[in-house]
Length: 264
Image (cartoon, rainbow, N blue to C red; front, side):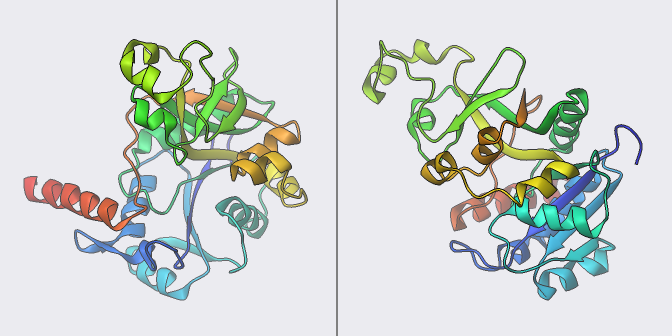
């Protein structure tokens, strides 16, 4: 790999509590995971790999010419699955992998490139990720939306499901709703779950037990901060469309891509 090369890895599980078989859900005639793979192929990645534990996903991808790696079924997270990919591919410790979520069929290739470049630009960081400003009160107070606070250097200080940083003078939802100008700042950032990792970090990550902060917030990136690893956070250069978590999300994406196909 050259100095700025990276590999895009798409972890894809068939099991899903909300939408079983989600990677194979039909969208405009093709499985969802194929749409994600195509988006990743439009990025600057030197290689795009789908990592799955299910032969049905592998078999759906092979006719399209996708590279598929079969991984163990017992991985607790996509990060653990990426670590196995790095091990199978025998990557150097400095090799960069971008974790592209398998339920984001609208992911802009520019964001994949951006998060990889951010990690390449900070040689002492182990991870890079993205964020975007929050301008909606309901989003700020939604525990399903992860917030991130970062330093002047761009390094993450903390990730939380709570509305951090906390505004002492306007401390509840009603106060923010009454004074929307409070959100006209870059202090509140929504974390975008797109990550670039160094392969050496992934190997170390597997040896660490979950930290207490990670267990409280249910955010695995806190394990890296707990162990002193730097996480670079860039502001997304283009809007990040929501992924597919629910049946309503799936219907929305189907409608959008069907409309795009109709316009061609």
